[in-house]
Image 1 (cartoon, rainbow, N blue to C red):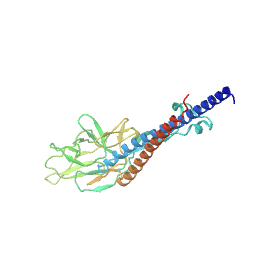
Image 2 (image 1 turned 180 degrees about the horizontal axis):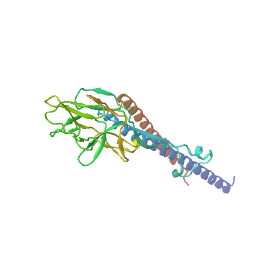
Image 3 (image 1 turned 120 degrees about the horizontal axis):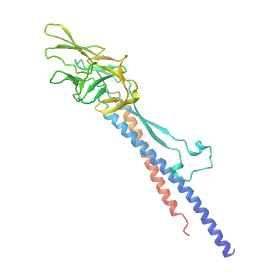
Image 4 (image 1 turned 90 degrees about the vertical axis):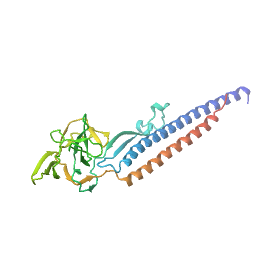
Length: 282
């Protein structure tokens, strides 16, 4: 074999190996990208589940549910099994977090027999105010402030009536009763039952517009209206709708999937390093 043919053959083999190596590097980069995306997604899911678990004992709490969307691989979406994009920007596949929704299912009811404890049964909320903004809440653990107004026991927010005003209980009032429709009444020293106001029980026109504001409060982007199905039960509290056993299982699953993605990133990185070292030097 002549020297010229030998040099041409070596150049051809070098070009071939370089092209093949470039393709393998692209594939490995894509795998690294998918694993990183999977790890990031599981980290987001873990933070949502952890917040749910932290509120497993919060009265009237509603857990959040992360929603994910899986993207089909490039060859499936474009029906070109032999064509692979040359840049990561054009690649598909993987999974991403697209939304977080709140599960508004009824939570378990716990009988407390306290006069100012109420549970909202059905679709509806109490209205409370911090003096500046008005919020919706399912937390029916109520008490009286120094002025006798009905307030939330957790943060002191004023519970509003159907007129948008506080309901004040006179000092001499005994045997406070709260009816299913929110009507509050009490017995005076003379034995007379006196109506004191009616708690507002409302619901948003669109539950998707509800936004959590912390302290078990919600705000509605749209309008709210009186609830036609919700009722109040006195002496009862609605517990958190978060099931701690199911939440713990989901947290363990999420942690394991996150660990798997991190291990895959480590393996791909090691393989990529070995592949780069194998590129022929010219």
